[in-house]
Image 1 (cartoon, helix red, strand yellow):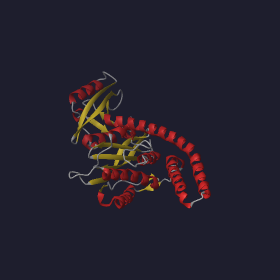
Image 2: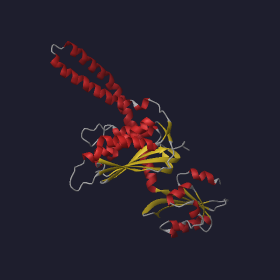
Image 3: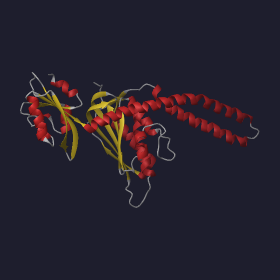
Image 4: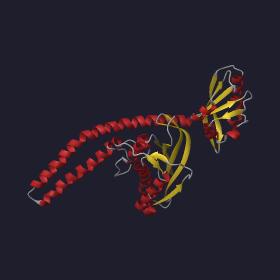
Length: 354
């Protein structure tokens, strides 16, 4: 067995001896259990779970060759939280290690499935809107041209106010149509990008726009390497999400008990991440966290759909375009929200998919 290939897997894998002691752990196991290979080596695999007797029983039977594999639900303690997992114990015949234990975090599997559905669903909506935008463009051009011709024939300059309204609204709708249909047509200008430089530029823009209404905090992982991407589109994606967070903080009802608005930008590196149906060994996770009221329940499932917004005067394009730009890089935007804490995570691959 080529154990080095196991490091390419997104799921945790242990190779254990006949007593159930760990002799090999892959990179995903280090992440899931929060321990290094050295710490896991020689450790009883069963005792890592909350019900060690059930896991040990499965290991004993697998080592004795009494079945090929068994799947069971379990939980493990990680830091201060309990994590629900699916554990598969496999008997290996004729191998150096008699038992292989595969552990999957159930929440991660559900999240990956949800993200796959989200990508497909949003793409279907975008295709519909692109077709609609194409149909709207020609009538808009005709409407604007007719208004200009009419303005030239008006007997009184005062009446031009009305034709200017038509022209300006036609221009506004044209810009909206271009935003709906334009980004997909231009290829990425992919170059090495420092995500922290982008974050700092976004912070400067948010601070200039919202001044003392919003406090910005940074929580950067200085070890994050550059990633290959289109700096302009990534900048726009981060800005759209951060500005949306700031706008929600400013728009919320204010009272004596209202906490000051805070937006935090945090960067981390994740390992063995599934993105757009592809497995990536390393990914950048840029979290934008605010202490606002949270995403309303009635739009949670549609928050990234074009034209969906809960804010008066909003276009519903900011988050949709941010998701679009991130997906063009092979990534995804996820979110978790409750009153007092909303976190949008921009997850971007940092190397070729396996």
